[in-house]
Image (tube, rainbow, N blue to C red; front, side):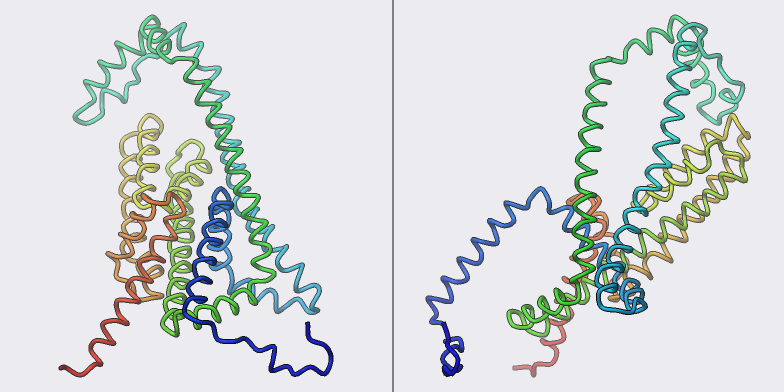
Amino acid sequence: MLEPGDDLRAAQPVPLSPSRTISRLVVTAALLALAVFLLWDFLPALIWATVLAIATWPLYTRVARLLHGEARGAIIAPLVFTLAMGALFLVPLALIAIELGREALFVAHWLPSLERTGLPVPDWVGDLPLLGRYVARWWQANLADPGAATELLGRLDRSTVIEWTRTLGAQLARRSTVLTFTLLTLFFLYRSGASLVRQIEALVLQVVGPSGRRVGMNMVHSVRGTVNGLVLVGLGEGLLLGIAYVVLGLPHPVLFGGVTAMLAMIPFGAPVVFCIGALVLVPEGGMTSALVLIVFGTIVVFVADHFVRPVLIGGAVALPFLWVLLGILGGLESFGLLGLFLGPAIMAALISLWREWIAAAASQPEA
């Protein structure tokens, strides 16, 4: 330990020999692998918190500057933004859960009457194009006859239903744990994000050089653009189609609009919802309303997927639309919902490195 008056030059680090450098790298890699093993179950929460922090950081910094006083700015702004992000996830899920609960009660009371009286074939079934006659025949044989309806419903194995319920409960508990740790991590990222970014930049500059910083910034811009392109555009699709649901008289338009907004964040997810809505509209408003919904939904999805999303996602880092689409689909296949944001970020890093290598090769004189 240094005492007062000692020469501070003696405390300066001594350059390491190559063997010690290799030993340090091996120990660091081993400790990093051990940390990943310990935190494996919490990695989704850490990654989700990082994605949310990157996406909302510009807005967060603006609000934090408005809070005068170091103590308030360091606690209140992170707390408010963390609670806001929690409400952004929990409120829509709670509304959808309430609507699903109401529908489940209706189905629970409707099934016994179906077993007693059967379900007559509606008039609109025969009017369906191409398949109307076959659907009406199947309906008459399996649902209109009480005995056939009872036999069809009796095929549902109660043990299978109970197992599905247990699996659903376990998944809800796991997702709730991930959400809790995500919000907790997000609070600390908001509070100490600026200093953490400076440390990461210093480490990247030392290990990789300036190119590493540029690649990292491209990944950050890609994540932010992906959040804007998927989440905001998905909410816009849900709002526009929700208005169409109300105008066309679709039952439970809020539920359909919320599910549309959620699935619109996934490529080709929104058409599944409004096509189901069109099938529901057939007995309610006729074939005309169903066709209007399909045409309007197709136009909305086409404009969002081919014009708005490519600009928001790929425009930040000049990423071609093909690589954006491949990054989203490949990330979704490999990492699940997190892959929607990780896939484009990985593609942005790859394209950034490719462009730097091409530029460096072009700047070198030919041999």
